[in-house]
Length: 260
Image 1: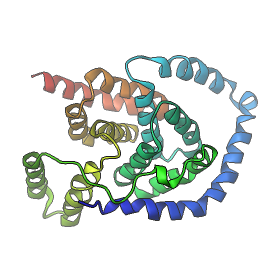
Image 2: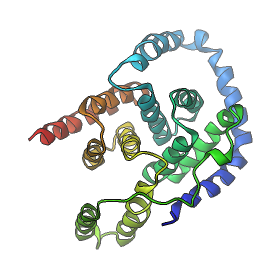
Image 3: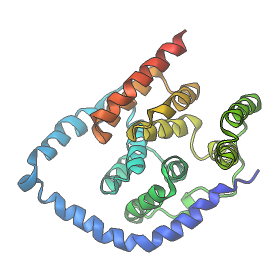
């Protein structure tokens, strides 16, 4: 089966190309602003080195690869463009491939909005230019989709249709066609990592009402309880403590329910 929504790459890349030049000047401003850290808020640099670089990113509960996926997903979801080049560098150094990064962006276009995804392309573009990453290293829209549990998908479809079909038939239809029968079946990102990106984006934006389904899916796909708990720790630093504490009760309840 040929995936239909992979065509997002071509359209988004074209749109992003128009904004790369604009982002270049923005990146220059960001670099310039970093010179003012000592003058404006020197503790930012101190705390980042002490708590993030030398502590958080070294914790064993989550690999640096997973932390990169969590953090990049949070930044895309929140539209925090200035921090993306640094995190993409970390991701590439942690063996996250350009194909996987492209899949994360494409995936989060549906979960955080296409505008956020397109903006992230412009932010990441200069990093790819520096590494001479070519289009041929990125996923195609002509891919054989993964197999799936037909019974589970039928149950999901019937539940959503019966509950919301009359409220918003368009949303329900696209949820099946664009998301669960296409996006979630793309092979360029492992199901566990696709779930990890989704949960991270939801937690980072405080959309905890959606976490129950997706965290259970993530754990069904192989994410451990320890890893899931550490996702919140990573989110606390990159999206703020209130977002982390909003997610904690939901994660706790899911952990408990899965042990019953």
